[in-house]
Length: 281
Image (cartoon, rainbow, N blue to C red; front, side, top):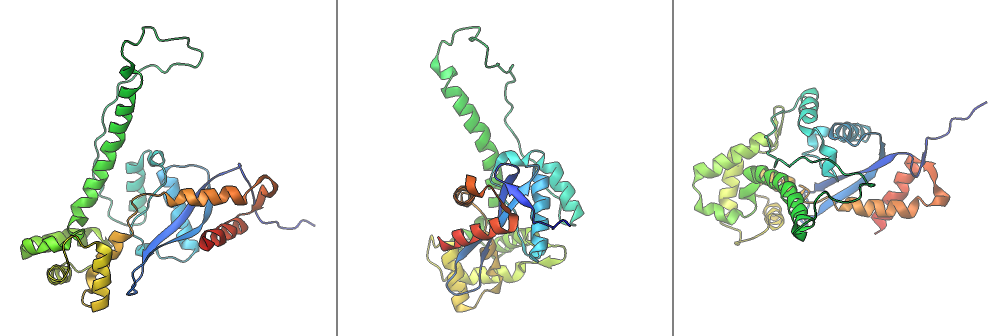
């Protein structure tokens, strides 16, 4: 008679990705929290595959996907073919499938050299051609895409970073900003913010805050005074990931837990041990 054993994972059998969720509560003492949900074995590191895994994990943990506002990955190379995959996935889950086009810098094609190739056909006259220019080329191509993403983000959230400046804007301009943001922060017919009410609340808040006051300080003030229910927009703003460096911490713990002597363990036990170690620190 065979016993059903839990699925065993060897240290190097499958690639893994960590899953975490960031949130901001309604408490007066506003705190941005990131919760580690566990490691998930994957077969393909494409954007579509990672999105499907994320949706499945949220469904298993009974976390409504309509309460989530975006996803991030720990490696830009994971986003190969992201536009076609994202449109297909957005159509399946019935959300807005509009994605802005991004421009990339064309690169000069050349024949790849093999390791056994002895030397260049022509000597390099200037060391810049070998060291400096390739670095600049890689940096320029990387920054182009990053600035396009920041530009798209700033298009909708820019007025929330320093609302003290809104007292210089007209009511029509503030309402226009809020309408654009409200269009983005919606799921089907459900709206995260009411554009008209948010505009009225910001018109009052901009007179109460100091110049250069941060969004988290403004959110604390609004919760303390209980005057601005639509400032949920600040909560969404504060959970937008600037980096995914927290993943490095998770994988550092993974190396400590999954040693050679513990090369096999169930997926549930692995995620449990990691959660205890991360919460302890």
